Image (cartoon, rainbow, N blue to C red; front, side, top):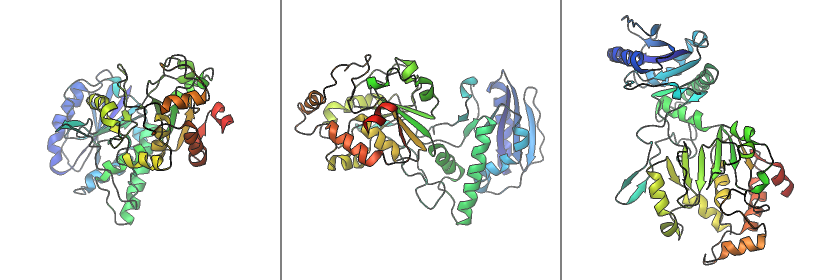
Length: 398
């Protein structure tokens, strides 16, 4: 494979390039042909026995210009970079200290910010710090929800030329729009990178209903940008349900997710719920140490409850996902108990709605999951959203 690594080193930062170059040469994708593209205002010359070095002269803009306009610099080399299989950007003060291999291959590669990657425990309370997104709606870097899918750093990113160069063009344009309006995004190019990554994803929500069996939708599900599953994940039947999983919304129980490589795990019930401490706190504490994790927003959840709709994990996932800037949400394997659970599900059994409602009512002090109320809410408030698509079974029910 032909690999391009982009570095920017203006002013005194050129003093860091030699070490960055040496680390890339020693540790980065050493089984492939690597060229470093150095964007600099310096006349210094560099050579290396393993990697090629291509220099592009740029005028220093100072801070934050040198980082804010990085994508404009990259576009100077667009035609040459189109000939590479993968392109990566690496901050010049970020060193590759251990071997990095093909695990970084991907259409578009982003890195969770190391300062916000995992929540931490402090004084017996779980805190999730998800970074500081641009919060001014007038900025093109605006992100509507700060706890969406995690906060990404600007220091290492990349992908195939088709996808990564498309991101450059979009972000470069958005930065110019902001500049025309007298706006500099909160964290400059990093804010725009996060906005780009969090906007316009095609998402599929895969539920555990038996109506998914025989659908042969596995390949379609795995083709989505983000695959969201519920509770037990349901990946035992790849032909119908696919194998890819990015996000799981779970019910506060200690499920066994084994070695699943999740981007995010979301507890469907907020800390303000009367049963949270008893039912959910142990799982939340445990999973927060392992995964990128958050607890669903109490305001969103209570808004549903105030409408006499206490949501199951499925409905809360739908409402929560639609709070973000997704391009589309396809719902499959979720039919409001019109079919049973799939056979592999621990709760496989009855399809009698009255019996199911009685189960949900038991021991909940009158505060229970009313399936019909949820279905009515879904039809009246979710289905009209033009981003929503449903499978054939649910479409007939609607």
